[in-house]
Length: 602
Ligand code: HEM
Image 1: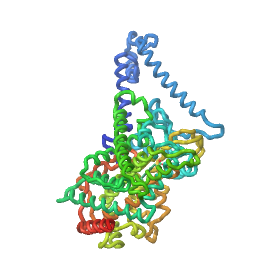
Image 2: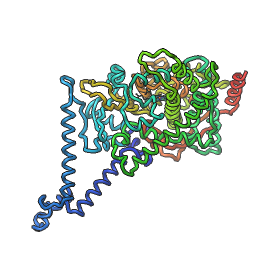
Image 3: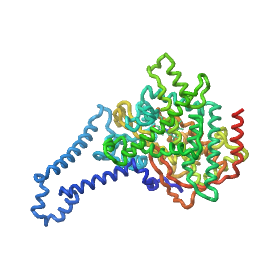
Protein backbone atom coordinates (compact mmCIF):
# COMPACT_ATOMS: atom_id res chain seq x y z
CA UNK A 1 0.00 0.00 0.00
CA UNK A 2 1.41 3.36 -1.02
CA UNK A 3 0.70 5.71 1.83
CA UNK A 4 0.65 9.45 1.60
CA UNK A 5 1.65 10.57 5.03
CA UNK A 6 4.10 12.97 6.51
CA UNK A 7 6.48 10.15 7.29
CA UNK A 8 6.55 9.12 3.63
CA UNK A 9 6.82 12.70 2.55
CA UNK A 10 9.81 13.28 4.71
CA UNK A 11 11.75 10.44 3.05
CA UNK A 12 13.42 12.86 0.71
CA UNK A 13 16.86 12.10 -0.56
CA UNK A 14 19.68 14.50 0.20
CA UNK A 15 19.75 15.91 -3.33
CA UNK A 16 16.41 17.62 -2.91
CA UNK A 17 17.60 19.66 0.01
CA UNK A 18 20.07 21.87 -1.81
CA UNK A 19 17.77 24.79 -2.38
CA UNK A 20 15.31 24.08 0.34
CA UNK A 21 14.99 24.44 3.98
CA UNK A 22 17.23 21.78 5.34
CA UNK A 23 19.97 23.87 3.86
CA UNK A 24 18.89 27.02 5.72
CA UNK A 25 18.45 24.90 8.81
CA UNK A 26 22.03 23.67 8.66
CA UNK A 27 23.11 27.14 7.69
CA UNK A 28 21.38 28.55 10.77
CA UNK A 29 23.05 25.85 12.86
CA UNK A 30 26.36 26.76 11.31
CA UNK A 31 25.82 30.45 12.12
CA UNK A 32 24.76 29.69 15.68
CA UNK A 33 27.77 27.43 16.20
CA UNK A 34 29.99 30.23 14.93
CA UNK A 35 28.24 32.57 17.32
CA UNK A 36 28.72 30.19 20.25
CA UNK A 37 32.36 29.70 19.38
CA UNK A 38 32.75 33.45 19.14
CA UNK A 39 31.05 33.89 22.50
CA UNK A 40 33.27 31.23 24.01
CA UNK A 41 36.38 32.96 22.73
CA UNK A 42 35.15 36.40 23.73
CA UNK A 43 33.49 35.16 26.94
CA UNK A 44 30.14 36.66 26.00
CA UNK A 45 27.34 35.00 27.98
CA UNK A 46 25.32 32.48 25.99
CA UNK A 47 22.19 30.72 27.23
CA UNK A 48 24.37 27.77 28.20
CA UNK A 49 26.67 30.03 30.16
CA UNK A 50 23.67 31.60 31.87
CA UNK A 51 22.44 28.14 32.83
CA UNK A 52 25.86 27.16 34.13
CA UNK A 53 26.38 30.42 35.94
CA UNK A 54 23.00 29.94 37.60
CA UNK A 55 23.98 26.47 38.78
CA UNK A 56 27.28 27.66 40.08
CA UNK A 57 26.27 31.12 41.18
CA UNK A 58 27.18 30.40 44.78
CA UNK A 59 30.69 29.48 43.77
CA UNK A 60 31.27 32.28 41.23
CA UNK A 61 34.19 34.51 42.06
CA UNK A 62 33.91 38.28 42.05
CA UNK A 63 36.39 38.51 39.14
CA UNK A 64 34.40 36.32 36.76
CA UNK A 65 31.15 38.10 37.68
CA UNK A 66 32.76 41.35 36.70
CA UNK A 67 33.51 39.89 33.24
CA UNK A 68 29.74 40.01 32.40
CA UNK A 69 29.15 43.61 33.42
CA UNK A 70 28.21 45.56 30.23
CA UNK A 71 30.47 48.44 31.14
CA UNK A 72 33.40 46.09 30.86
CA UNK A 73 32.54 44.72 27.37
CA UNK A 74 35.09 45.08 24.60
CA UNK A 75 34.35 47.16 21.48
CA UNK A 76 33.72 43.95 19.47
CA UNK A 77 31.29 42.63 22.07
CA UNK A 78 29.42 45.94 22.19
CA UNK A 79 29.17 46.04 18.37
CA UNK A 80 27.77 42.52 18.27
CA UNK A 81 25.20 43.27 20.96
CA UNK A 82 24.22 46.49 19.19
CA UNK A 83 23.84 44.61 15.88
CA UNK A 84 21.58 42.01 17.49
CA UNK A 85 19.49 44.69 19.21
CA UNK A 86 19.04 46.59 15.93
CA UNK A 87 18.01 43.36 14.21
CA UNK A 88 15.36 42.63 16.82
CA UNK A 89 14.14 46.26 16.78
CA UNK A 90 13.86 46.31 12.97
CA UNK A 91 11.98 43.01 12.99
CA UNK A 92 9.53 44.14 15.66
CA UNK A 93 8.89 47.49 13.96
CA UNK A 94 8.29 45.69 10.64
CA UNK A 95 5.71 43.48 12.35
CA UNK A 96 3.99 46.53 13.84
CA UNK A 97 4.10 48.45 10.54
CA UNK A 98 2.63 45.51 8.67
CA UNK A 99 -0.29 45.37 11.04
CA UNK A 100 -0.88 49.16 10.86
CA UNK A 101 -0.58 49.47 7.04
CA UNK A 102 -4.17 48.58 6.24
CA UNK A 103 -6.86 50.44 4.36
CA UNK A 104 -9.60 51.79 6.61
CA UNK A 105 -12.35 49.20 6.78
CA UNK A 106 -10.33 46.72 4.73
CA UNK A 107 -10.17 44.04 7.41
CA UNK A 108 -7.14 42.68 9.19
CA UNK A 109 -4.10 40.87 7.83
CA UNK A 110 -4.37 37.09 7.65
CA UNK A 111 -3.19 35.32 10.79
CA UNK A 112 -0.08 33.17 10.78
CA UNK A 113 2.81 31.77 12.79
CA UNK A 114 5.49 33.93 14.44
CA UNK A 115 7.95 35.20 11.82
CA UNK A 116 11.60 34.87 12.79
CA UNK A 117 14.11 37.60 11.96
CA UNK A 118 16.06 37.10 8.70
CA UNK A 119 14.64 33.72 7.68
CA UNK A 120 10.95 34.23 8.55
CA UNK A 121 9.13 30.88 8.49
CA UNK A 122 11.58 29.10 6.17
CA UNK A 123 12.30 26.36 8.70
CA UNK A 124 8.61 25.65 9.46
CA UNK A 125 7.79 25.44 5.76
CA UNK A 126 10.44 22.76 5.37
CA UNK A 127 11.00 20.42 2.46
CA UNK A 128 7.35 19.72 1.71
CA UNK A 129 5.58 23.08 1.65
CA UNK A 130 2.21 21.58 0.65
CA UNK A 131 2.13 19.43 3.81
CA UNK A 132 3.35 22.26 6.04
CA UNK A 133 0.74 24.60 4.55
CA UNK A 134 -2.02 22.04 5.08
CA UNK A 135 -0.91 21.65 8.70
CA UNK A 136 -0.71 25.43 9.23
CA UNK A 137 -4.18 25.85 7.65
CA UNK A 138 -5.61 23.56 10.32
CA UNK A 139 -4.29 26.00 12.92
CA UNK A 140 -4.77 29.40 11.26
CA UNK A 141 -7.51 28.80 8.68
CA UNK A 142 -7.50 28.49 4.89
CA UNK A 143 -5.96 31.93 4.37
CA UNK A 144 -2.85 32.61 6.41
CA UNK A 145 0.34 34.59 6.16
CA UNK A 146 3.97 33.58 6.53
CA UNK A 147 7.24 35.23 5.65
CA UNK A 148 10.09 33.66 3.71
CA UNK A 149 13.23 35.68 4.26
CA UNK A 150 12.20 39.26 3.41
CA UNK A 151 9.08 38.29 1.56
CA UNK A 152 5.58 38.22 3.08
CA UNK A 153 3.53 35.42 1.52
CA UNK A 154 -0.19 34.73 1.74
CA UNK A 155 -1.03 31.03 1.43
CA UNK A 156 -4.41 29.94 0.06
CA UNK A 157 -5.78 26.50 0.96
CA UNK A 158 -9.03 24.70 0.22
CA UNK A 159 -11.30 25.04 -2.80
CA UNK A 160 -13.38 27.93 -1.44
CA UNK A 161 -10.53 30.33 -0.73
CA UNK A 162 -8.65 29.39 -3.91
CA UNK A 163 -11.69 29.86 -6.17
CA UNK A 164 -12.66 33.08 -4.40
CA UNK A 165 -9.21 34.45 -5.22
CA UNK A 166 -8.21 32.98 -8.59
CA UNK A 167 -11.66 32.77 -10.23
CA UNK A 168 -13.87 35.43 -8.64
CA UNK A 169 -11.02 37.96 -8.54
CA UNK A 170 -9.20 36.56 -11.56
CA UNK A 171 -7.12 39.55 -12.66
CA UNK A 172 -6.39 40.66 -9.08
CA UNK A 173 -4.54 37.40 -8.37
CA UNK A 174 -3.11 36.84 -11.87
CA UNK A 175 0.34 38.34 -11.58
CA UNK A 176 3.70 36.76 -10.73
CA UNK A 177 6.21 38.06 -8.17
CA UNK A 178 9.21 39.97 -9.57
CA UNK A 179 11.61 37.23 -8.44
CA UNK A 180 15.07 37.39 -10.08
CA UNK A 181 14.88 33.67 -10.95
CA UNK A 182 11.65 34.26 -12.94
CA UNK A 183 13.51 36.70 -15.24
CA UNK A 184 16.04 34.00 -16.06
CA UNK A 185 13.43 31.68 -17.64
CA UNK A 186 12.95 31.81 -21.45
CA UNK A 187 15.36 34.71 -21.82
CA UNK A 188 13.14 37.02 -19.75
CA UNK A 189 10.05 36.62 -21.98
CA UNK A 190 8.47 33.64 -20.28
CA UNK A 191 4.71 33.24 -20.53
CA UNK A 192 4.56 31.23 -17.31
CA UNK A 193 6.76 33.50 -15.17
CA UNK A 194 5.90 37.00 -16.43
CA UNK A 195 3.75 39.45 -14.54
CA UNK A 196 0.16 40.16 -15.56
CA UNK A 197 0.21 42.78 -18.34
CA UNK A 198 -1.31 43.54 -21.75
CA UNK A 199 1.63 41.94 -23.55
CA UNK A 200 1.33 38.82 -21.35
CA UNK A 201 -2.38 38.57 -22.21
CA UNK A 202 -1.53 38.67 -25.90
CA UNK A 203 1.26 36.10 -25.52
CA UNK A 204 -1.05 33.76 -23.62
CA UNK A 205 -3.86 34.12 -26.18
CA UNK A 206 -1.53 33.25 -29.07
CA UNK A 207 0.09 30.37 -27.14
CA UNK A 208 -3.21 28.87 -26.00
CA UNK A 209 -4.70 29.06 -29.52
CA UNK A 210 -1.61 27.46 -31.07
CA UNK A 211 -1.41 24.64 -28.51
CA UNK A 212 -5.07 23.86 -29.13
CA UNK A 213 -4.63 23.97 -32.90
CA UNK A 214 -1.78 21.44 -32.65
CA UNK A 215 -3.35 19.06 -30.20
CA UNK A 216 -7.07 18.79 -29.66
CA UNK A 217 -8.48 21.66 -31.76
CA UNK A 218 -9.20 19.76 -35.00
CA UNK A 219 -9.80 16.15 -36.02
CA UNK A 220 -6.59 16.25 -38.10
CA UNK A 221 -4.44 17.61 -35.25
CA UNK A 222 -5.83 15.02 -32.83
CA UNK A 223 -4.93 12.30 -35.30
CA UNK A 224 -1.38 13.60 -35.74
CA UNK A 225 -0.92 13.85 -31.97
CA UNK A 226 -2.27 10.32 -31.60
CA UNK A 227 0.28 9.07 -34.14
CA UNK A 228 3.16 10.75 -32.30
CA UNK A 229 2.09 9.16 -29.00
CA UNK A 230 1.67 5.76 -30.62
CA UNK A 231 5.18 5.85 -32.14
CA UNK A 232 6.72 6.87 -28.82
CA UNK A 233 4.65 4.32 -26.87
CA UNK A 234 5.94 1.58 -29.18
CA UNK A 235 9.56 2.65 -28.65
CA UNK A 236 8.96 2.92 -24.90
CA UNK A 237 7.44 -0.58 -24.72
CA UNK A 238 10.35 -2.01 -26.74
CA UNK A 239 12.94 -0.49 -24.41
CA UNK A 240 11.07 -1.32 -21.19
CA UNK A 241 10.68 -4.95 -22.25
CA UNK A 242 14.29 -5.14 -23.41
CA UNK A 243 15.51 -3.76 -20.06
CA UNK A 244 13.32 -6.26 -18.19
CA UNK A 245 14.67 -9.31 -20.05
CA UNK A 246 15.41 -12.30 -17.82
CA UNK A 247 13.30 -10.89 -14.98
CA UNK A 248 15.47 -7.77 -14.52
CA UNK A 249 14.11 -4.58 -12.96
CA UNK A 250 14.76 -1.17 -14.53
CA UNK A 251 14.13 2.47 -13.69
CA UNK A 252 11.51 3.67 -16.21
CA UNK A 253 12.10 7.38 -15.34
CA UNK A 254 14.69 8.36 -18.00
CA UNK A 255 12.80 6.44 -20.71
CA UNK A 256 9.51 8.15 -19.76
CA UNK A 257 11.18 11.58 -19.96
CA UNK A 258 12.51 10.98 -23.49
CA UNK A 259 9.20 9.42 -24.64
CA UNK A 260 7.04 12.45 -23.69
CA UNK A 261 9.73 14.94 -24.72
CA UNK A 262 9.79 13.28 -28.14
CA UNK A 263 6.03 13.69 -28.53
CA UNK A 264 6.37 17.39 -27.69
CA UNK A 265 9.46 17.71 -29.88
CA UNK A 266 7.48 16.27 -32.80
CA UNK A 267 4.58 18.67 -32.09
CA UNK A 268 6.81 21.75 -31.58
CA UNK A 269 9.74 21.14 -33.94
CA UNK A 270 8.68 18.27 -36.21
CA UNK A 271 11.50 15.94 -35.11
CA UNK A 272 12.25 13.24 -32.56
CA UNK A 273 15.44 12.00 -30.88
CA UNK A 274 16.86 8.60 -30.17
CA UNK A 275 16.70 7.40 -26.55
CA UNK A 276 20.46 7.03 -26.75
CA UNK A 277 21.05 10.65 -27.85
CA UNK A 278 23.27 11.86 -25.00
CA UNK A 279 22.82 15.57 -25.78
CA UNK A 280 19.03 15.35 -25.70
CA UNK A 281 19.06 13.29 -22.51
CA UNK A 282 21.42 15.78 -20.88
CA UNK A 283 19.13 18.67 -21.86
CA UNK A 284 16.17 16.92 -20.25
CA UNK A 285 18.00 15.82 -17.13
CA UNK A 286 17.63 19.12 -15.25
CA UNK A 287 13.88 19.19 -14.60
CA UNK A 288 14.33 18.50 -10.92
CA UNK A 289 16.80 21.34 -10.40
CA UNK A 290 14.64 23.75 -12.40
CA UNK A 291 11.55 22.95 -10.33
CA UNK A 292 13.41 23.30 -7.06
CA UNK A 293 14.40 26.88 -7.87
CA UNK A 294 11.03 28.19 -9.02
CA UNK A 295 8.75 26.09 -6.79
CA UNK A 296 7.00 27.60 -3.76
CA UNK A 297 9.39 27.76 -0.85
CA UNK A 298 12.59 28.09 -2.86
CA UNK A 299 15.05 30.32 -1.04
CA UNK A 300 16.83 31.77 -4.05
CA UNK A 301 14.56 34.79 -4.40
CA UNK A 302 13.63 35.49 -0.81
CA UNK A 303 17.07 35.49 0.78
CA UNK A 304 19.02 37.70 -1.68
CA UNK A 305 21.96 37.99 0.72
CA UNK A 306 22.72 34.32 0.06
CA UNK A 307 23.97 35.43 -3.38
CA UNK A 308 26.85 37.38 -1.84
CA UNK A 309 29.07 34.54 -0.64
CA UNK A 310 29.71 30.91 -1.58
CA UNK A 311 26.96 28.56 -0.34
CA UNK A 312 24.80 25.78 -1.81
CA UNK A 313 21.93 28.17 -2.66
CA UNK A 314 24.20 30.42 -4.72
CA UNK A 315 25.74 27.44 -6.49
CA UNK A 316 22.29 26.09 -7.33
CA UNK A 317 21.16 29.50 -8.62
CA UNK A 318 24.14 29.73 -10.98
CA UNK A 319 23.39 26.21 -12.09
CA UNK A 320 19.78 27.28 -12.72
CA UNK A 321 20.96 30.17 -14.91
CA UNK A 322 23.05 27.78 -17.01
CA UNK A 323 20.20 25.24 -17.35
CA UNK A 324 17.87 27.97 -18.61
CA UNK A 325 20.45 29.34 -20.99
CA UNK A 326 21.06 25.87 -22.49
CA UNK A 327 17.36 25.11 -22.79
CA UNK A 328 16.61 28.45 -24.44
CA UNK A 329 19.59 28.05 -26.83
CA UNK A 330 18.28 24.63 -27.90
CA UNK A 331 14.90 26.15 -28.84
CA UNK A 332 16.45 29.30 -30.35
CA UNK A 333 18.50 27.14 -32.71
CA UNK A 334 15.30 25.37 -33.85
CA UNK A 335 13.58 28.75 -34.29
CA UNK A 336 16.36 30.12 -36.52
CA UNK A 337 16.40 26.97 -38.68
CA UNK A 338 12.60 27.02 -39.00
CA UNK A 339 12.54 30.69 -39.93
CA UNK A 340 15.15 30.30 -42.63
CA UNK A 341 13.48 27.22 -44.17
CA UNK A 342 9.88 28.43 -43.96
CA UNK A 343 8.35 28.91 -47.43
CA UNK A 344 5.98 31.90 -47.73
CA UNK A 345 2.35 30.80 -47.89
CA UNK A 346 3.16 27.16 -47.02
CA UNK A 347 1.05 25.55 -44.27
CA UNK A 348 2.80 25.35 -40.86
CA UNK A 349 4.80 22.13 -40.46
CA UNK A 350 4.65 22.26 -36.67
CA UNK A 351 3.95 24.53 -33.69
CA UNK A 352 7.11 26.58 -34.23
CA UNK A 353 6.03 27.45 -37.79
CA UNK A 354 2.56 28.37 -36.55
CA UNK A 355 4.02 30.79 -33.98
CA UNK A 356 6.32 32.33 -36.59
CA UNK A 357 3.31 32.83 -38.90
CA UNK A 358 1.10 34.39 -36.21
CA UNK A 359 3.71 36.73 -34.78
CA UNK A 360 4.98 37.60 -38.27
CA UNK A 361 1.45 38.58 -39.31
CA UNK A 362 1.19 40.83 -36.25
CA UNK A 363 4.49 42.49 -37.09
CA UNK A 364 3.44 43.10 -40.69
CA UNK A 365 0.03 44.50 -39.83
CA UNK A 366 -0.07 48.28 -39.82
CA UNK A 367 -3.17 48.54 -37.64
CA UNK A 368 -2.43 48.81 -33.92
CA UNK A 369 -4.03 46.51 -31.41
CA UNK A 370 -6.33 48.11 -28.85
CA UNK A 371 -3.47 48.22 -26.37
CA UNK A 372 -1.02 49.55 -28.97
CA UNK A 373 1.26 46.57 -28.22
CA UNK A 374 2.58 43.80 -30.45
CA UNK A 375 4.51 40.60 -29.82
CA UNK A 376 7.93 40.79 -31.45
CA UNK A 377 9.77 37.75 -32.86
CA UNK A 378 11.73 37.25 -29.61
CA UNK A 379 8.49 35.98 -28.10
CA UNK A 380 8.44 33.00 -30.47
CA UNK A 381 11.43 31.03 -29.08
CA UNK A 382 10.56 32.19 -25.55
CA UNK A 383 6.97 30.88 -25.76
CA UNK A 384 8.02 27.59 -27.37
CA UNK A 385 10.69 27.17 -24.65
CA UNK A 386 7.94 27.50 -22.05
CA UNK A 387 5.65 25.05 -23.80
CA UNK A 388 8.34 22.45 -24.45
CA UNK A 389 9.78 22.84 -20.93
CA UNK A 390 6.46 22.86 -19.05
CA UNK A 391 5.07 19.91 -20.94
CA UNK A 392 7.96 17.46 -20.85
CA UNK A 393 8.58 18.02 -17.12
CA UNK A 394 4.97 17.62 -15.99
CA UNK A 395 4.00 14.84 -18.40
CA UNK A 396 7.05 12.70 -17.68
CA UNK A 397 6.39 13.07 -13.94
CA UNK A 398 2.77 12.06 -14.54
CA UNK A 399 3.77 9.02 -16.57
CA UNK A 400 6.13 7.84 -13.83
CA UNK A 401 3.33 8.21 -11.29
CA UNK A 402 0.99 6.14 -13.46
CA UNK A 403 3.57 3.35 -13.72
CA UNK A 404 4.27 3.35 -9.98
CA UNK A 405 0.58 3.20 -9.20
CA UNK A 406 0.12 0.25 -11.59
CA UNK A 407 2.84 -1.68 -9.79
CA UNK A 408 1.76 -0.70 -6.27
CA UNK A 409 -1.91 -1.47 -6.95
CA UNK A 410 -1.87 -4.60 -9.20
CA UNK A 411 -5.62 -5.05 -8.74
CA UNK A 412 -6.17 -1.60 -10.33
CA UNK A 413 -3.83 -2.52 -13.18
CA UNK A 414 -5.83 -5.73 -13.75
CA UNK A 415 -9.12 -3.81 -13.78
CA UNK A 416 -7.76 -1.28 -16.31
CA UNK A 417 -6.60 -4.18 -18.53
CA UNK A 418 -9.93 -5.97 -18.15
CA UNK A 419 -11.84 -2.86 -19.32
CA UNK A 420 -9.46 -2.32 -22.27
CA UNK A 421 -9.77 -5.95 -23.39
CA UNK A 422 -13.57 -5.86 -23.09
CA UNK A 423 -14.08 -2.51 -24.88
CA UNK A 424 -11.20 -2.42 -27.38
CA UNK A 425 -10.52 -6.15 -27.80
CA UNK A 426 -7.14 -7.73 -28.54
CA UNK A 427 -7.08 -7.17 -32.32
CA UNK A 428 -6.44 -3.44 -32.35
CA UNK A 429 -4.86 -0.77 -30.12
CA UNK A 430 -6.87 1.68 -27.99
CA UNK A 431 -7.38 5.10 -29.59
CA UNK A 432 -8.85 8.48 -28.64
CA UNK A 433 -12.32 7.54 -29.88
CA UNK A 434 -12.41 4.83 -27.21
CA UNK A 435 -12.02 7.33 -24.38
CA UNK A 436 -15.77 7.87 -23.64
CA UNK A 437 -16.22 4.09 -23.39
CA UNK A 438 -13.37 3.54 -20.91
CA UNK A 439 -14.62 5.07 -17.65
CA UNK A 440 -12.36 3.00 -15.39
CA UNK A 441 -9.24 4.05 -17.33
CA UNK A 442 -10.33 7.69 -16.94
CA UNK A 443 -11.15 7.15 -13.26
CA UNK A 444 -7.62 5.74 -12.81
CA UNK A 445 -6.16 8.90 -14.42
CA UNK A 446 -8.23 11.28 -12.26
CA UNK A 447 -7.45 9.38 -9.09
CA UNK A 448 -3.72 9.33 -9.96
CA UNK A 449 -3.78 13.12 -10.39
CA UNK A 450 -5.76 13.66 -7.19
CA UNK A 451 -3.80 11.21 -5.06
CA UNK A 452 -0.32 12.25 -6.22
CA UNK A 453 -1.18 15.96 -6.62
CA UNK A 454 2.19 16.05 -8.32
CA UNK A 455 1.98 19.82 -8.87
CA UNK A 456 1.06 20.42 -5.22
CA UNK A 457 1.50 24.21 -5.17
CA UNK A 458 1.12 26.31 -8.34
CA UNK A 459 3.77 28.69 -9.65
CA UNK A 460 3.73 31.61 -7.14
CA UNK A 461 1.09 34.27 -7.89
CA UNK A 462 1.05 37.97 -6.94
CA UNK A 463 -1.75 40.49 -6.45
CA UNK A 464 -2.17 43.39 -8.86
CA UNK A 465 -4.14 45.71 -6.51
CA UNK A 466 -5.10 45.94 -2.81
CA UNK A 467 -7.82 43.41 -2.15
CA UNK A 468 -9.39 41.17 0.46
CA UNK A 469 -10.10 37.50 0.66
CA UNK A 470 -12.39 35.82 3.19
CA UNK A 471 -12.38 39.07 5.16
CA UNK A 472 -8.59 39.46 5.24
CA UNK A 473 -6.84 42.44 3.71
CA UNK A 474 -4.17 41.59 1.11
CA UNK A 475 -2.09 44.48 -0.25
CA UNK A 476 -1.05 44.97 -3.89
CA UNK A 477 2.10 43.04 -4.91
CA UNK A 478 1.68 40.39 -2.21
CA UNK A 479 3.15 36.98 -3.12
CA UNK A 480 0.45 34.29 -3.03
CA UNK A 481 1.02 30.53 -2.83
CA UNK A 482 -1.87 28.31 -3.98
CA UNK A 483 -1.93 24.92 -2.25
CA UNK A 484 -3.66 22.56 -4.72
CA UNK A 485 -2.76 19.59 -2.55
CA UNK A 486 -5.11 20.84 0.19
CA UNK A 487 -8.05 20.71 -2.27
CA UNK A 488 -7.26 17.18 -3.44
CA UNK A 489 -6.81 15.85 0.09
CA UNK A 490 -9.64 17.68 1.80
CA UNK A 491 -11.43 15.08 3.97
CA UNK A 492 -14.69 17.03 3.69
CA UNK A 493 -14.61 16.73 -0.09
CA UNK A 494 -13.11 13.23 -0.49
CA UNK A 495 -13.89 10.17 1.58
CA UNK A 496 -10.63 8.74 2.97
CA UNK A 497 -8.49 11.06 0.81
CA UNK A 498 -5.27 9.17 1.65
CA UNK A 499 -6.60 5.99 0.00
CA UNK A 500 -5.93 5.34 -3.68
CA UNK A 501 -9.34 4.40 -5.03
CA UNK A 502 -10.22 5.08 -8.71
CA UNK A 503 -13.79 3.83 -8.14
CA UNK A 504 -14.58 7.04 -6.24
CA UNK A 505 -14.88 8.74 -9.67
CA UNK A 506 -17.56 6.34 -10.95
CA UNK A 507 -21.28 6.87 -10.40
CA UNK A 508 -23.65 4.01 -9.59
CA UNK A 509 -24.04 3.19 -13.31
CA UNK A 510 -20.28 2.89 -13.75
CA UNK A 511 -19.91 6.20 -15.65
CA UNK A 512 -17.45 8.95 -14.79
CA UNK A 513 -18.91 11.34 -12.23
CA UNK A 514 -18.13 14.64 -13.98
CA UNK A 515 -18.59 16.78 -10.86
CA UNK A 516 -16.09 14.64 -8.96
CA UNK A 517 -13.64 14.70 -11.87
CA UNK A 518 -13.79 18.49 -12.17
CA UNK A 519 -13.12 18.72 -8.42
CA UNK A 520 -9.51 17.56 -8.89
CA UNK A 521 -7.23 20.59 -8.89
CA UNK A 522 -3.87 20.03 -10.55
CA UNK A 523 -3.93 22.41 -13.56
CA UNK A 524 -4.91 25.37 -11.30
CA UNK A 525 -7.87 27.66 -12.02
CA UNK A 526 -8.43 31.23 -13.18
CA UNK A 527 -6.38 33.40 -15.51
CA UNK A 528 -3.12 31.51 -14.95
CA UNK A 529 -4.65 28.08 -15.38
CA UNK A 530 -2.43 25.69 -17.36
CA UNK A 531 -2.81 26.02 -21.13
CA UNK A 532 -1.82 22.37 -21.67
CA UNK A 533 -4.67 20.68 -19.78
CA UNK A 534 -6.46 19.17 -22.80
CA UNK A 535 -3.20 18.14 -24.46
CA UNK A 536 -2.02 16.50 -21.22
CA UNK A 537 -5.22 14.53 -20.68
CA UNK A 538 -5.14 13.23 -24.26
CA UNK A 539 -1.47 12.22 -24.05
CA UNK A 540 -1.72 10.56 -20.66
CA UNK A 541 -4.84 8.65 -21.67
CA UNK A 542 -3.19 7.35 -24.87
CA UNK A 543 0.10 6.42 -23.21
CA UNK A 544 -1.45 4.55 -20.32
CA UNK A 545 -4.15 2.85 -22.41
CA UNK A 546 -1.59 1.57 -24.96
CA UNK A 547 0.91 0.53 -22.28
CA UNK A 548 -1.69 -1.34 -20.22
CA UNK A 549 -3.18 -2.97 -23.33
CA UNK A 550 0.24 -4.30 -24.33
CA UNK A 551 2.20 -4.92 -21.11
CA UNK A 552 2.18 -6.18 -17.54
CA UNK A 553 3.98 -4.10 -14.91
CA UNK A 554 5.51 -5.58 -11.76
CA UNK A 555 6.98 -3.86 -8.67
CA UNK A 556 10.45 -4.83 -7.49
CA UNK A 557 9.82 -6.94 -4.34
CA UNK A 558 13.25 -5.92 -2.98
CA UNK A 559 12.29 -2.25 -2.88
CA UNK A 560 10.71 -0.61 0.12
CA UNK A 561 7.03 0.16 -0.50
CA UNK A 562 7.60 3.46 1.26
CA UNK A 563 8.94 5.56 -1.53
CA UNK A 564 11.10 8.63 -1.70
CA UNK A 565 10.05 11.76 -3.51
CA UNK A 566 11.75 14.98 -4.41
CA UNK A 567 9.83 18.20 -4.04
CA UNK A 568 10.11 21.18 -6.39
CA UNK A 569 7.41 22.55 -8.63
CA UNK A 570 6.46 18.90 -9.10
CA UNK A 571 6.61 15.93 -6.72
CA UNK A 572 8.83 13.39 -8.45
CA UNK A 573 9.14 9.77 -7.40
CA UNK A 574 12.82 9.10 -6.77
CA UNK A 575 14.29 6.26 -8.75
CA UNK A 576 12.25 3.07 -8.49
CA UNK A 577 12.49 -0.05 -10.60
CA UNK A 578 9.87 -2.20 -12.30
CA UNK A 579 9.71 -5.25 -14.52
CA UNK A 580 7.76 -4.98 -17.78
CA UNK A 581 6.65 -7.94 -19.89
CA UNK A 582 4.61 -8.11 -23.07
CA UNK A 583 1.10 -9.51 -22.71
CA UNK A 584 1.44 -10.96 -26.23
CA UNK A 585 4.01 -9.70 -28.76
CA UNK A 586 5.20 -6.49 -30.41
CA UNK A 587 3.35 -7.43 -33.60
CA UNK A 588 0.22 -5.30 -33.10
CA UNK A 589 2.26 -2.21 -32.11
CA UNK A 590 4.72 -2.62 -34.98
CA UNK A 591 2.01 -3.23 -37.58
CA UNK A 592 -0.16 -0.31 -36.43
CA UNK A 593 2.74 2.18 -36.46
CA UNK A 594 3.82 0.92 -39.89
CA UNK A 595 0.30 1.13 -41.32
CA UNK A 596 -0.20 4.71 -40.09
CA UNK A 597 3.17 5.77 -41.52
CA UNK A 598 2.31 4.26 -44.90
CA UNK A 599 -1.11 6.01 -44.89
CA UNK A 600 0.63 9.29 -44.08
CA UNK A 601 3.12 8.98 -46.93
CA UNK A 602 0.39 8.34 -49.51
C1 HEM B 1 -0.24 16.83 -16.42
C2 HEM B 1 0.42 17.81 -16.94
C3 HEM B 1 0.41 19.24 -16.46
C4 HEM B 1 0.09 19.76 -15.24
C5 HEM B 1 -0.35 19.02 -14.01
C6 HEM B 1 0.25 21.20 -15.33
C7 HEM B 1 0.01 22.07 -14.29
C8 HEM B 1 0.23 23.44 -14.38
C9 HEM B 1 0.09 24.35 -13.28
C10 HEM B 1 -0.34 23.99 -11.87
C11 HEM B 1 0.41 25.57 -13.73
C12 HEM B 1 0.48 26.87 -12.91
C13 HEM B 1 -0.84 27.57 -12.85
C14 HEM B 1 -0.80 28.71 -11.87
O1 HEM B 1 0.24 29.29 -11.61
O2 HEM B 1 -1.87 29.00 -11.30
C15 HEM B 1 0.73 25.46 -15.13
C16 HEM B 1 1.07 26.52 -15.93
C17 HEM B 1 1.40 26.39 -17.25
N1 HEM B 1 1.42 25.23 -17.99
FE1 HEM B 1 0.96 23.40 -17.33
N2 HEM B 1 0.66 21.51 -16.59
C18 HEM B 1 0.75 20.35 -17.32
C19 HEM B 1 1.10 20.24 -18.64
C20 HEM B 1 1.36 21.28 -19.49
C21 HEM B 1 1.58 21.16 -20.91
C22 HEM B 1 1.50 19.86 -21.72
C23 HEM B 1 1.84 22.41 -21.37
C24 HEM B 1 2.14 22.84 -22.79
C25 HEM B 1 1.29 22.89 -23.71
C26 HEM B 1 1.78 23.33 -20.24
C27 HEM B 1 2.00 24.68 -20.31
C28 HEM B 1 1.84 25.55 -19.26
C29 HEM B 1 2.06 26.98 -19.35
C30 HEM B 1 2.54 27.75 -20.58
C31 HEM B 1 1.78 27.51 -18.09
C32 HEM B 1 1.83 28.96 -17.66
C33 HEM B 1 0.45 29.58 -17.73
C34 HEM B 1 0.43 31.03 -17.26
O3 HEM B 1 1.26 31.42 -16.43
O4 HEM B 1 -0.44 31.76 -17.72
N3 HEM B 1 1.48 22.60 -19.13
N4 HEM B 1 0.61 24.15 -15.50
